[in-house]
Image (cartoon, rainbow, N blue to C red; front, side, top):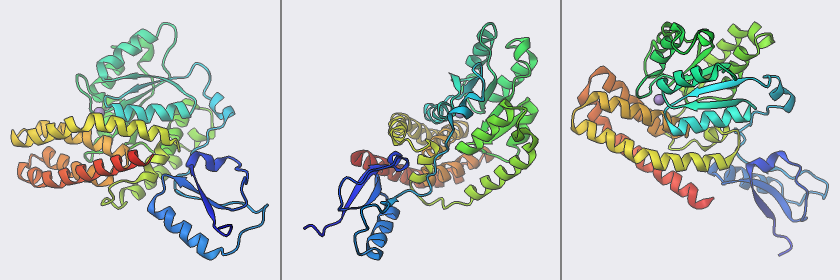
Length: 350
Ligand code: MN
């Protein structure tokens, strides 16, 4: 039995620590939860390394190699300046959680408003003692959407001193022309959802640290990011759950994934029911609303198949094509079920 190799399962966050060899039989570490790809890599590794490595040899950490965290150094966090504060305007709890988690990670303080009305109020109240530095603005929200909120801010409704505050749109890219619509409303920049941590960080740097290289190379940076968006757009949309993508989005904090899944479970049955009911009622506006919300949430959680087919359904609803929307309903339901299974399977393993 002393020939048996031990492979320790550890949370991915441990990969960045120096792990001491406590047992000479430890052959490798593997990230938890173990995904198929990592298991294959492990078998390959054990097969090609027959003998035990020496005591001082590095122990390989296998797993989720694509989930490279963004490291924001302490001095980099201080670069923002102590008074820097972000207003995050987003109606969906899952999307709020993802964006807020990233802002925290970047060392930025923030406040959340759930719609345009709340955002205007927050800006108005804040101006007296502790002003906001930048607004991250979702586009579709109940009561007052991001476009109207922006127009109102630019008109001075929230106060003269915030009229020119940088406003970054967060769009789910439902239609071509989204960018123009944001610019017309008076937004300064836009990023697409699901939010890529690196793109968000670079965009924030560009607007908050105006005297850095980031702004000098703004155009170049923007172009690079666009290319990156294209690269992610051609991704395989048949995948039920892209765990590595969501792990990256939460900057390698698996405990945040648990929270996101909880929110998904609490949020989605209602949206799914709304979508189904709207198709029965032949209410395309309602269907568009429900599909849009589902697309955003599932995209953020890396539920690619679900995000892709509700996205298609949303496009049909926008185009007014009820028949096409209806034919997609079973595909959506199927993807939804399989996503739920993948999440509950994950919850039972962790
Ligand atoms: Mn929204």
